[in-house]
Every structure is written in structure tokens, then in C-alpha cells.
Length: 378
Ligand code: GLA
Image (cartoon, rainbow, N blue to C red; front, side, top):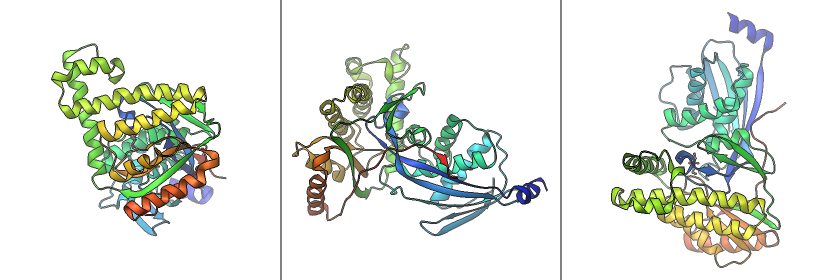
């Protein structure tokens, strides 16, 4: 009865938007107490959500694919994948005691799916942000960020880190953020790249098994750290030792664990150096660190693929490109490239041709603007 009352007297509708993200450097270390340097982009997901007056009936329409679901809160079964993200968000918000009743929602988005630009965080965060405002939940940003991350862990099955949801909520126009994933402190760093710009190249491949491979990497890193901790009690995380120390533990780690841990340790150092380089506007150093990150992701962490490696390789013949690497979870998606602003068109055309000749696939290039994070649209 209360909800019916609020429906007729408030007829509340809200429109929310939350972006996808890029990541300048710091890959696969958000779940290893590392640092990351993401930024929100000007592509995202928009929701319109209206209280429908029922106690727990929800209907959601996905405009891009013209698909709909209806369920009762707490009683959903057999949902399509896109709806699992949303159901997960809803259930995780309820764990905070959020009293969310029935509603109707519709959404659309322009973050290319499977491109490593985190369309999923954009979906979750826009939804959570909208529900928070619609039901006056007054959750803080970190509660929303963590609920969205947990939705992926508990309802989708990806044990993701916190980077994507953090970027989608906390993004600030013109800035990348350096997030310390150990204590969640962060700084905004103006993304001044001098006469260089970031260009993304989408391989348009998204290899199977990415989810299980992602979770496997996480397990391998945990197991390497556990073995080290068993022997050295003072080690709490990957932040407590360097590469020399890691190499001294060779006899207790498997080959795979050694490689995974080496990526984590070296990538943490690369992010620190990259944020110094960005502040000093030293694009040459930043570019070298991006190449270093790719090598490590490809050889030590083994989350690249032939298409991503090829795109990075093609840039090495071009002195107008300072850096290139795979971005996001890997196994497909985009590379991020640091390219001289006067050379962007030539660069894109040349790489398009090379990639098409090798794989028969038309890649898409994006020059994205760095935008603000989640917002309510008036
Ligand atoms: C995905 C995850 C993030 C992060 C990246 C790799 O985008 O959602 O948490 O681990 O992969 O850096």
C-alpha cells in the first residue's frame, strides 16, 4: 500500500548514465594490491528507471538488443547474461539493507561489448547509481563500487578487481586516476600528453574462455603469494617485495606462478614510473612503459592473443608511435596507443590495412574523450 501511495504521488522516474573506461597502464594488478591508472570515457550506458508501485515486480528492457526480462526481486531464475549483471547489482544493494521495491527500467549503451572498455561496469554502475538516487538510499560511492564488483563475483562468476567500477563512478573529465588498490586511496592526474594522443584499436575478437582464464590468473597469483607467505611471515602482499626477492623464491614456486608473480611485481613498478612520467610530461618514457606492460602481459601473464600482439607489433615500425599495449582483461578487445597528433590518420589507415591483410578483419579505431563518471541526467 505504501509503495502504491508513493507511486501515485511521486511517479518517480530517474535517468542515470555511467561510462566505460580506458586504462593507461596497470593491468591485472588491481586484484593483487597493485596500482592502476584508468579514466572514464565518453561512452556509457543510460538507464531510465521508474517506480512501478508493486512490492517486488521488476521489468527491464535492453534497447540495443531488444530483449526484456521480468522477475520478482529475490526470485529470479534462468536470466540471460546481461540481466545477471543487473540482478546481481540489485541483490548486492539489498545486502546493505536497501529497501528497493518494484520498478520498470529500460537502458541503452554505446560502449562496444567485448572491447576491453568495460561495458559491464558501465552497465552495473549506471543501474546502481540510478537505483540509489531513485530510492533515496544515500549509499556512498565506495558502497556502489563494491556492490557492482560483487555482482560480478557472485552472480556472473568473474572474480574481477575494482578498477572498472571505480573508474565508472569516480572518473573526472580530462584526468586519469592513480588508484592504490591496497588501501583504495587515489589521485587525479591531468592527462596532458603534449603533442600525443591516445588511440584505441579494437581487434574485434573476443576469445572464448576469457572468464575462466581470468579467474585462473587470480588463483595462480594467490597461490604464489601464499607459498611465499608460508616461508616469509612478514610478507603481506605483492607490495612487500621486489623482483630480486621474487627470484630468490624460485625453488618454492611453480614455473607458471613465477611468471604470474613477475608480471605483478614489474607492472606495479611500471605504474609508479608511468605516473611520474605523466606528471613530467615525459611521453617517451610513458610509451616505453606501455610496451613493457604489453610484453609482460603477453609473455609472463599470458593474457594476450595473436591479434593483440600483431597490433602492438605493427606499431613498432612507426616512430610516430611512442607506446602500445593490450588493454583490459585481454584475449581480445583493444590496444591503447600513444600516437603523435599529426600522424593519427596515417597511423590508423596503415594499421587497418596490415591487420586486414593478416586477419581479414576490419578493425575500429577510437579517439575517446576522458569524461566524468556516473551522473544523473536531468
Ligand atoms: C577486467 C577486470 C578488472 C581488471 C582488468 C585487467 O577489466 O574487470 O578488474 O582486472 O580486467 O586489468
